[in-house]
Image 1 (cartoon, protein in one colour):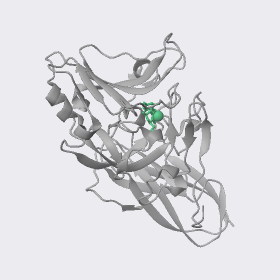
Image 2 (image 1 turned 90 degrees about the horizontal axis):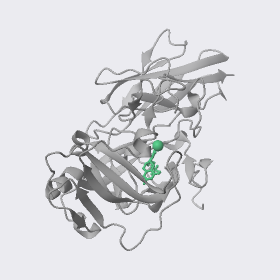
Image 3 (image 1 turned 90 degrees about the vertical axis):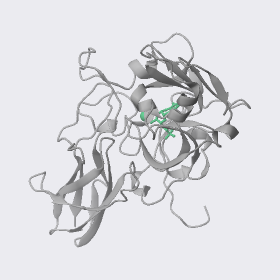
Image 4 (image 1 turned 60 degrees about the vertical axis):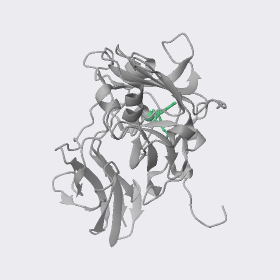
Length: 353
Ligand SMILES: Nc1nc2c(c(=O)[nH]1)N[C@H]1C(S)=C(S)[C@@H](COP(=O)(O)O)O[C@H]1N2
Ligand SMILES: [Mo]
């Protein structure tokens, strides 16, 4: 790179398929390009063909149809800023530890998506009376545990979420075609749900009248609170309220004086109302300053706090976010066997020298 800018380097968590974590320190302002964007794939990248971008809408509808990318672009569109948060983000922080990609905080990204509300396409097709869920099929395929055949990456949404006006069939990211590794040419975007719902390389939309039971629906992306049995299981859906500290870095040594502590907060269950910070293991809390643009209804909230350090010593720094629906980060994570939805109060430790 010749412009002298420091760029993040991913932490590789898998090569085939490619799984890469981004350092969260860089995720400030309008940083939207691919070099800052984590990658989570279940299979090798699909070989796109001239038919990619011809989207089939069928199943329990009155009139199945195929729409070409050019025609999709002529329909009324919607542009929204949406964070993608992997359900496994912060899996490494579960105690006891759980198996799976050991993500720290960097399986998150945010960008501006443009697309056609899915409900427009469903209304053109005409839902049959017994329509229950909508299934989304990606072009990528492969094998997965407990299934004998090659399967596509496929997920469903309940009808109320499918018909939500902000659920999009997206064709642009930040005003450009979607990058190949992130779903070109078409990607489903499901605001407020964890990333697994936003199916990349979207090829087919099928309305079904029975509950969909594919491996990424009923095996993965399920909370199993019991270590060995299926007792108490529930599907992974909405993003839990959360906050993370971007700077300073965990276990860093800093000078005595004023420091800007910065971070992010988000919730799929409401808007961020408050982020608090504590330097005494949660005995006392103080509000941080939020930089919020409430017109961006789904965007994460950047926050900062000026800390005048006490004299030298070691200090824990913890943050706790609250959303407009009264959700607050818990002290302990909701432990589950596959390690989804981590949102316990975030803590780093620093030494003042
Ligand atoms: N077709 C397809 N869509 C997919 C996936 C996938 O493997 N294949 N992974 C899902 C998961 S679990 C996440 S977190 C996001 C990751 O999106 P990104 O790779 O663009 O960051 O895509 C989702 N959509
Ligand atoms: Mo994910």
